[in-house]
Image: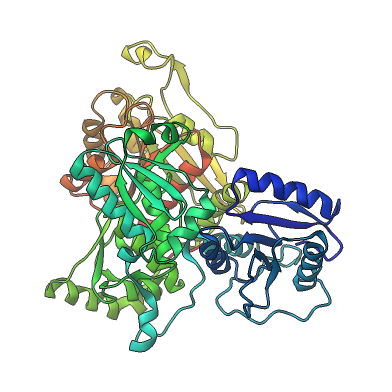
Length: 391
Length: 179
């Protein structure tokens, strides 16, 4: 982590190449060691232009993903928000105003003399690899947890027996980019032509179910921000026309399935589609292709449990001892790809209830090789997380 | 001393030797020889007895990785190698022959071992040949009475891919176990 005397690592989001060039020129004049552009994961501070068409989305999305990160936002008319970690700078942004904002950021960062920021209960613990007593496996778990906020957010567990609190665990996929993409794919199949999805800035995605490819005209950050919040009618779909060919030629395709998976995870943010029953058993129809998709935390264990059938979402959380958001996000993504179903027949529900009664006995009857498996899984986690952090 | 083994099986050219090499923490022991039969059309060298590698765990224990010879005439080795094994990783080459037939064959050949442990299927060379799809493999597994088996697209040269396959098969055996 940077200290108050080091160069700040600053990430930006939502800038086109022209704006970025101008911004880099501007930064070079702020001071040689004041800050440097960095990747989003490693940044000390993020800069967001609120006047961008999707600026508000980017702000909310970034705040959801990095709840404790200072942000500098610029706008012609700054909104005068109350978030103590968000520093507003009015446009046109001058050197002195931006330098002052950077100084405020330094005070907000750990290691400064500033008071500690308010506690945010669902935020994963900050990594501290300097602790000599840190167990390598728990350190790996912490890294995985930090990385996981990118996909599953940081929603805390709720009391599932409290009807009012429980409403927080549901979302409506149709209200998000996830639902638009599902409709777009169905439409493309019906008309047997690729379709495009537009956001307020123009073409954002081109989808071709025949080739199984998606073409993304937005950065990963912008797409994530777009996917995390309800679209509220700002996104539309239409069929691809010949005039789209030049734009398409400049874009690289990626598997449509991977796009659907990511977008479902981002929309879910650790919640489940409305209508999902917490006590009906989940049947895993097929494992998601986890070597080619983002692997949410604990996905393997959850899939392994569901592959045996007869386990509800509530019992999955209880049996595996993992945060609800891990189970709910994985379920939502699997459902988006058609890999899971819930069984609601009286017999299936009865079996799930029976399983629930025996849940407490599973740990007691641990297989003899559990200790070996734990050690081996630690080794495998190291290989996986090590590659993710390197990437 | 306990002798824990993970077995890599599958037809010639599916990537067993490569997968064992990729996952191993030690230089692998190979028993390759020049192919002298129809295998020569697939690759110049082939495994005749076994491939051996090992994963060293933090507490000093070892997981032994065994790759079986792919040719059916060496099938007498399969039973020997699986003795004491804890899991099966089955690799199928999607670019040659009839991959689903190969899947059926190996599920049958290792059915006793799979009943006692679990299997994960890694489909290789999907970049060369995308059909059959993973859904086709899943349907074949369902027909064979093996629902819930992990099936992933795999590049045997990728340590991440091979480690994810192993993680998946362990999760089927004991999902409660956690690193």
